[in-house]
Amino acid sequence: MPSPAEVVAPRITAAIAAAFGAAYPELTDADPVLRPSQFADLQANAALALGKKVGMPPRDVAAKVVEHLDLGGVAAQVEISGPGFINITLSNSWVAGATGEMAADPRLGVPSQRTQNIPIDYSSPNVAKEMHVGHLRTTVVGDALARTLEHLGHNVIRQNHLGDWGTPFGMLIEHLLDVGESSSEASLLESDPNAFYQHARDTFDGDPAFADRARARVVALQAGDPDTLRLWVELVDLSKRYLNRVYALLGVTLTDDHFAGESRYNAELGAICDELEAKGIAVVSDGALCVFLDGYTGREGKPVPLIIRKSDGGYGYGVTDLATIRYRAHDLHGERIVYVVGVTQALHFRMVWDTARKAGWIGDDVHPIHVQIGNVLGADRKILKTRSGEPPRLTDLLDEATASARAVIDEARPDLAEEVRAQIAPQIGIGAVKYADLSVAHDSEYVFDLARMVSLTGNTGPYLQYAAARVRSIFRNAGLDPATVGHGGEKRRIVVRDAGERDLALALLEFGSTVTEVGDELEPHRLAAYLFELAQTFSSFYEHHPVLKAEDAELRQSRLALCALTLAVLVQGLALLGVESPTQM
Image (cartoon, rainbow, N blue to C red):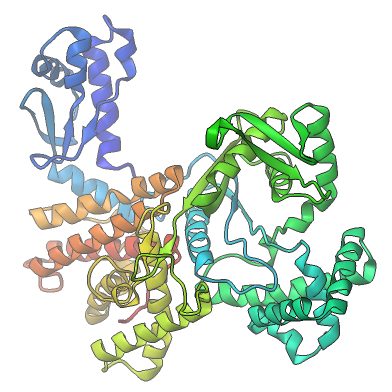
């Protein structure tokens, strides 16, 4: 179901073409410049710019457009105001009919777009390392985008670019051998990987013989020694068990099938370097093989290099990222290739992609996109860290959020059974953390404030979850199933008699276009903002409009249908963000 603006816009464009297209062919697809208005439902501002084009006062232009404008069955009133604004008030009957069509649509008005192949790179933790707060945003934002793009009909290919290769694996493998592959120390890789890593590092720093063995093990690993590779696989598998446990706790859709570690590109790195050097794209500078691209300069105008092979012969992560983009374009046939990665990598990615284009590995039909991720801050507005100066462990933050949510629920709803409160506490606490992250623009910073996150008031996940639970309670009190009253069946009879019903219906009609915008712009905060506004609109509606005690049967059924549709949109919208909707709160 298109939004009101999507219904009106092409009709205004057609009116502009009818009024001026014969003399000005370029105006046959003019932008109507539709905006919300405090004086009407929609306002078209195209006349202001068109006046200069056609040599007429904007108000006269607006009059000509209105003369050719056909909004029969859609608008109740069209007025010209000010210097040439066209104010459009939709008819109550059209609003009611459109909302009824949406209620009968199993997709709730969300369109199915032309399918694209979209590899999306997110989370990307390291083997034998804890996931920390720095991994929160890439994982949560990436997962919300993956869910939304799939819902829009795209073939989403999740790529968890695991840090599973490099010199640290020498000391990790040697430490695993020293402690025993089936020892309790080895099991730390599944429960406390930082401890295992730190023990290996301490031994490496304090035992020269161990350090020598570790360096030799790196050589064996890179040479493909079978036993060393077996131990490396064991390390990676133990780490995957830990990571999957965190993903399950966080409620994201990443699985073993989505791990695409750095190691998968090892065999290609040498050939990539050779090809770039043969094409004259890469040159040796101070012993390292580098790419220097026009337009990339640093201090004093000196060119900034993309180092693809270091002076010691080792490969930099620049060449791994080149192999990655080539694989995602050629093998995965990516059309949009999305990287949900920290904002600090912006320059690096631009250089990698420009190099790949120069090499002919990606064409104009391939669009790499960096969804830049901002930092999570502490109360001091500095990057969030523990007292020891380390980034907080993600599992600790999630456990703390669950405990905070439990405290809020215990205080607000002591009447709920113990098992219910135990069940919904993690849904609320973890949902609160995810929503707080998703409700701000992905490239901005935000302060991690658990007290605010788990609050039942304000723009929070729990507020939206409570709104959905509140709607469910209406149907529970009436002994009705919202699925039999709401969406997903025959066209529902909805009537719009006053401003409160109208406001709620209009808010509901924006759902499909909002989800589309999230997929097109890769900005999940747009959906979060929409859901918060919808919940507020419903709260105002419910406060002033009796549902079960409506004045007549038609109005009761209509308001129940509006409530059911609101519930369906809230639940579906939160699900696209990766946030659960408890049945009770």
